[in-house]
Amino acid sequence: MKKISAGVILALGSVLGVPVAEADDDFKLNMGGRIQADYATYFNNSLMGPAGAKLRRARLFAEGSIAHDWRFKFQYEFTNTGAAGFADAYFAYTGLNDTAITLGQSKTFFSMDQLNSSNDNIFMERPLLEGLDAYGNRRMGLKLTTHGANWMLGLGGFANALNENLYTAYTPTTSAFRTGVTSTPTNQSGIYTISGRATFAPLYAKGNVLYFGTNLNYTGFGENSAASAFSTSPETSVTGRKLLSVYVSRPSSQFEYEVETAVVAGPLAMEAAYVGLEASRRGGLPSAHFDGYYVQASYTLTGQPRNFQPSVGEFHYLKDIGRGGAWEAALRYDALNLNDAKAGIYGGKGYNVSAGLNWYANKHVRLMLEYSYAHIDNIPVTLPVGQSYTNNPINNTDVNILQARGQFLF
Image (cartoon, rainbow, N blue to C red; front, side):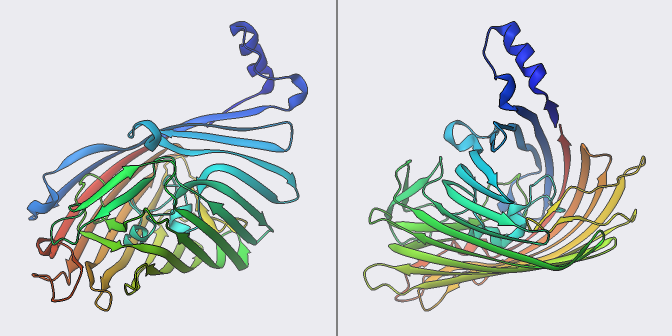
């Protein structure tokens, strides 16, 4: 990340003939980005496709502050196009003590692993339970956050994302994900979310942390929403195959609740989270329940503790990296259940076991190597009598994945 002073910006504006800022605006600008390049191979499973490579993320951002009490951030993801490329795009008022009021597209509150930057997470992909975050992540809205040294509270109201998809038609099907559903991108989708977060770290010192957090999300759907959809791949980005996928027809609302905890004891760090989702439906249809969880641990072989920030309840990039770099080993188990027999919905159950080794060369470069085993089951071979939706039974499968990432931050 490169910091540019107001003087340099003013000089540049003078040369270009562009009025960039006034001297008394206290204008500060940071610019940077990330490149994450992935390679993955899948053993003995034709569903996942052949080995391959891709740019997982390629982003540029600009963030800063102006007139003392206002800050802004704009970030674009170049692996997407058009509105889908917009990530953060907001401005915030910070004139109140330890409080920010943010307007624009920013993250809702879903889980610590989602709120952590992908630059900082210890695995290449987030856990399976992130598949329940279909109407979260980044959305247009207004939110308020306040914090102390070891706690934070957040509340926000959000409308559509800039690349919203409204599912305008639904036909029960035994075919693969997205068959039988028509989606229309729109900025007026009628979907809205109320999102809240509370965190507390009763123990916090460098290298010693005990943390608890919770996130609550309520999403309402308009009459034109024919279905809501949830899906996820095994924890790899190179394939586009969604082995766990489900639709909820005629949704009226959904409520997500999440609890999370983390412990840091020197070079050892552990964290866990559980997410439950209750989806209500129109027309007297039965509601649906899905849930997921993960537990993970990491150990820094070179002795550095993970960098936990209690004022936001997030992990950030490793600090105190020596001249030879820092080494980190990680292990995770996570599971997701998209079946609800009472609702007649069978999206499948799955779990994933991942082991990783990370080398932090410095504060800009990280190399990651992972092996994952994923198991998907409980998808009926035929549609049960009286039931409304089943995932493709071919997705009852096992997947072995070996993958690597090179990450460069600037």
